[in-house]
Image (tube, rainbow, N blue to C red):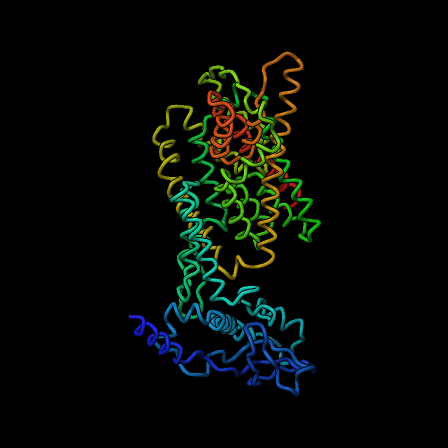
Length: 509
C-alpha cells in the first residue's frame, strides 16, 4: 500500500505544474495620449504586468486584450483539489486575469464613445474600475495560497471542535466553521463572485443578499425580541446602567483604532465589536466601512461564541471572591401591562432622540411586542423559532465564508481581531467595575447589596453572558443563582449597543 501511495504521488508530481503562459496582448496609453492595441506585455504575477521596454517609462497599461492562458490546457489533475492546494497562487492569478478580461468587455463598449484623441482623464473615467492597481492580488498576504487554505481549514476544524465537543455556542460556531471549510476548498469558489462563464458561489450570493444589504441583522433582532423577557430590566431599572457601562469598550476601541491608523468610520465599525452584538456590528459596518465587513463580522461572531472562554478570567481578576459570593434577592413581579408598554416606550424615545437606531430597536421591539401582547402567538413563535433559525444558518455560513485564506490571513484582519478582543475585554471590565461601584454605594446607603458579576452581562451576547455570569457566581457560592439578575443588564446591553450604533451612524454616516 505504501508503495502504491508513493507511486501515485510521484505521478502527480510529474504532471504539468502550470496551466498558462506568461505573455499576453494589452491596450496601452502612451505619453502623447494615443491608444495602441496589441502591445505584448508579460505577466509576472497577479499584480505585476511588465510593459515592453520601449514604453516602460512613458506608457500605461489600461486594458488586457488577450488574457487567456497561452500554455498547455489544464487536464484532470489541474481540476483536482490536490492541485488547488499545491498551486493555489497560479489559480488565483488565472482568476484575476479572467476578472480583467470580463472588465475589458465593458471597456471596449465604452471605448466606442470616446473621442479620437482622448485625454488620460477621459480614459480613466470611461474605464471606471479597470486599472492596473485593481488587478486582484489573491495570493494570501504572507503565505502561499495552498498552505494558507490548509491553515484556515485547521482553524475551521478547531471551531467545529469547540462547537461539538466543548459545546461553545454550537448554533454559531458550527455554521461559521463549516462555512469556513467550504470557502477554503480549492477550485470550488463557493464564496467568490463568478468570473467568465462561472456563476457566483452560493455562499457569495447569501452573503451579498443578507449581510451586505443589512437584512439579516434586522431579522435576527426580530427573533431576539420575540425570545427576550425584559421583565428583569423593568423590575430593576438601575441595571440599565450596567448595560450602558459595557458600551465603554466601543468608544475606547474607537480611539485605539484611530491611533493605529484606521480612519474614523473604520474605527467606529471596529469599536462596535465591543458590544458583543454581531447583528449590530454588521448593520453599522455595512454603512460606515463595507470594505471591512468580512473581518468585523467574523470577529464579532467569534467573540460572541467565545464568551465562556474570554469573560471568566476577567471576572475573577476584577471581582474579589467575597463580592462574587454576594446573594441577591428575588426580583419583583412585573405585570403584563408593563411588558406591553415597555417596547412601545423604548421605540418612541428612540424615534425622538436617536432615529438612526430605530431600524435595529424597531425590529427588536416589534418581536418583543408580538410576544408580550399575547394576541400574535403565531408571529412571535415564527420569529423565535423558524425565522431566527433559518437566518442563523444563513448568517453563520456567510460569516464563515469570510474565513477564506485570502480574506482572513492579512495584517489588517489580524489587527481588527486584536482590537475587537480589546473592545470585548474593556466592555466586560467596564460593566464589572461599575457593578463594584454600585455595590459599594448601595451598601453605604443601607440598600441591598449588588453582586458585581452581573455587570459582565452588560455586553449584549444574549443569553450567553448571563449564563456565564451565573456559572462564575455558582463557583464561589453554590447557592448563588444570578441568572435572572444578570438578564437585566444583558438585555440592557442589547438596547445600549443599538443606541451606541445609532449615535455613531448619526455622526459619521
